[in-house]
Each structure stands twice: as C-alpha cells, then as structure tokens.
Length: 202
Image 1 (spheres, rainbow, N blue to C red):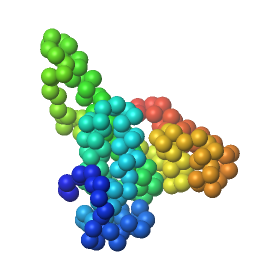
Image 2 (cartoon, rainbow, N blue to C red):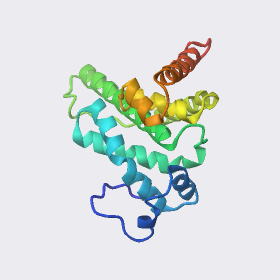
Image 3 (tube, rainbow, N blue to C red):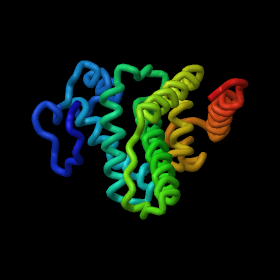
Image 4 (tube, rainbow, N blue to C red):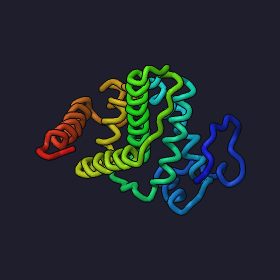
C-alpha cells in the first residue's frame, strides 16, 4: 500500500504525464499496482474529499487523517470497484463510511469513558474486527444497490447530497434538464430507501 500524504508541489516523473487521464484510466492503472496512477487520483480529489470529511468532523487533524484513511481504503479495495458508479462517487462512498465508522467509535469511546468515570479525551478505543467487517458490508450493499442505475445518476446523487449543489447547478454541469435531475434523484433515493426498508435487511 502506498503511503498517502498530501503534496503541494507539482507531480514529477511518470505521474506528471498522467494528469490528463480519465478517472477510469487511473483506476485501471491502480488495479495494475501503479502508485503513480494512484497519486494522480489522490491529488485530483484530495481537496474535495477533505472538505466533505471536514464538514462532518469539524476537526482539521481528524479530517486529514480520515481523508488519508479513505484514500488508503481506495487503494486496498480497488479490485472491488464495479464501475457501476463513477470513481469519484465510489470514493465519496468510502469516505462517508470511513467518517461514520470514526464517529461511531467516538460515541462508543465517550460512553465507555463516562461509564468508567474517566476523562473522555484520554480514553482509547480501536476498531474491532467486527467494525471493519461491518464497514465492508455497508460498502458492498451500497455498490450492489447502485448497480441498477446509470453512472450519471449516481453522480447526480453525490453532487446533490455530498457536494450540496443545487438542482440548477447539477443540471448545468451534467448538461441535462432540471426535470431529468429531479427524476434521477428521486429514483436513486427510492432505491436506497426501499432496500433499507426491506424485511430482514440490516
């Protein structure tokens, strides 16, 4: 696994020639074990993923650590990327679940510290194998659900609910009508809600 660290300077060597590659082409390279392809994808989306994470944890150190953890998970699990959603939507999904897992651990940490009469800021808690398994299951379910919609519809969903763009902004970016964007959002939301409401679903 490559060491994931923010880089402010220009990319050098082979990675510099990859800057114009599509996301899908970068994914192909990462699947082949290319760290150069991974670094380009990392540089391309680090700021957006960091901003997404920061809005949820409100701590710069935590946001940077969780963003790097998310990209590390991208590299580790790239073989599981189905191509049904865009690479960016898939990365956002990993980041979202990384943050949720972190927040859940923090709640458990605070509860245990309070029960023990200890200072919550000094208590330590690490993810259990069960936590890791649960996160992988969540990601797998999300990917499975989105297979019935097109990649552009998945991207519309993330632009609306992750990037917080308006219907008009999304329509302009995607070169589609406002009605098409609303219809797409409704379809994806219904798909996710119906799966969550299905009997026996966890």
